[in-house]
Image (cartoon, rainbow, N blue to C red; front, side, top):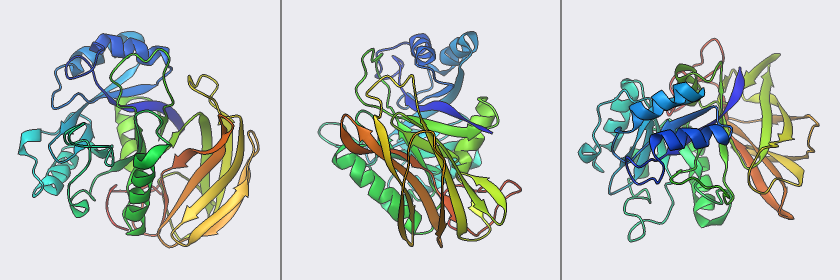
Length: 333
């Protein structure tokens, strides 16, 4: 398994983007993505064109849609469900999420703490939090300057609160890509762990929560438990593990690159363990937890210390398959 650079939240002229499906694919190739998901607002009109262009350029394009409702947005990856945005209400949103998953799609809560009405109707997620807990993934970071600002802090806090409840919900980033961005402001990547960059394998990685989000840092993280190594998103046989972390720079990252790393934080429901870290040097940290374990990477960027990367969680106990991964993302432990 390796980690592939993906963008899971994109738009074209089929909704409110400024790039055609073909232009989006060309730009994604220029930017070094392995796979993208086309998630135009409430339409799949551009999907076939984007997939065709992707095949010509060697880029995996996965069909998707952004459910753009008056109470919140969701990116739905896979293109197999028959849920219509106009049928989603605050009363049935949990059932609609489940229906999409049963059809084979992966559902993520999109930019849940972004400013809503009157700037962007529905951008802020106003659904009852209990109704969206079944989602596979959560946009912990979104759009520009993803690791900064009030929305980023609130999204990260809410995601950790979901993990604390025993939910298994992955961390993803949404560029919410609408325009070419030749000189982009600060943005992030989602890296998805998979056997290949095919649609099937990327969907599988997203469903397992084998993901991390990053601003300019490649993160090689694993948990060793009872002599066996587990990837991000895995369910471990017990909540005792040695967490292994190795970081490198993303050399073709197009915004401000990190100057140096300062520390890794191993965050669990039992507390936080901090360890110094430098580029190119692997660290190993022992930890115990009852529900989850997340790795955060900090470093200096633009001469200020920032949070540079967040992994999805490792989980303690519960049902796991032969690879130690979640059978059903979004479910309780």
